Length: 388
Ligand SMILES: Cc1ncc(COP(=O)(O)O)c(C=O)c1O
Image (cartoon, protein in one colour):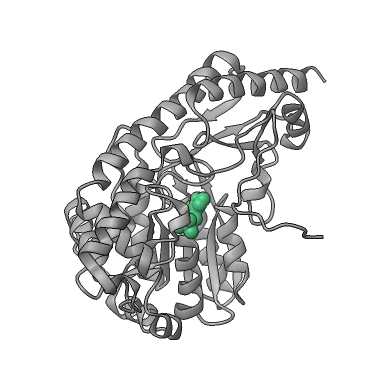
């Protein structure tokens, strides 16, 4: 029975470091900068801030994004190849609603972001898993799935993937695999949905090129978001792709009737970004999250036995751990929680089966000193499980 109205999604149990939540740390969000941007936006844009917006999204934000994307990625989306979304979740749902037919076969890398699967399952699609490893989606597995479909006289229409700082594994799709994936998509005429939500959170390196920037045809539609780089509550992102597809989204009944996605928030973010605040802010986030990730992996290097595989990311929020047989995550979770640390079992990120020995830890929400304690608690739980 519901007897109150919660304000936010996050619920933390007292005394437990819950590394299950892949949320950005609210303490790292640019509260003061956004407050000033809100006031600057009302001066700069006046009543336009409060009007129904342009269907493809607020012009000042589109212009800023277009310039930044062209500069950083070497591909200009043009006027017609970009639209504002309400974040990647909504963007994915729009793609499913507007660019795919009922009964479509959608390939999904496995493991994958579990809520993307939930979104895809809201549509009348057939989801087919494709195995992924430390280097992202496995090309051989993809070829095998496609050959199998062909034998049945069927064809995939779309593929959903997170090639850069993957959720849940933290992996990056290698350059070789990126090239191969695009070539296969062209040859087999399917659309790649590139969920690029963590692109701005590389630690020390420049992120790998997006599939969208590498695509010489029109086989990639890419979703970007301000959820991790500014704040998820803004519900703001963008989509780049073939102008015909972007037009299909911008010209949808919802955006035409409602005047674009989250126009008010988009105007404030435009003022924030145009004041030169975005780059220094993401630079500070990269440094903070790199430190958090490093704290966790350095602690595990000394605390965990060698036969436990820890995959350390180069960006994003997640560390992925594989336990050796016969250890199982289902047995580890209650022990870990009893010691005051929690996580999401790997199984949750697989379409059908897999992940029984895997763990996803998000290092985004807690400062390094808390993560060091969380790592100790996790290691204690692992030792206890080993003795059982
Ligand atoms: C891979 C991935 N896609 C999408 C999202 C959600 O993005 P948004 O907040 O922009 O809807 C998340 C958030 O955890 C994510 O990890």
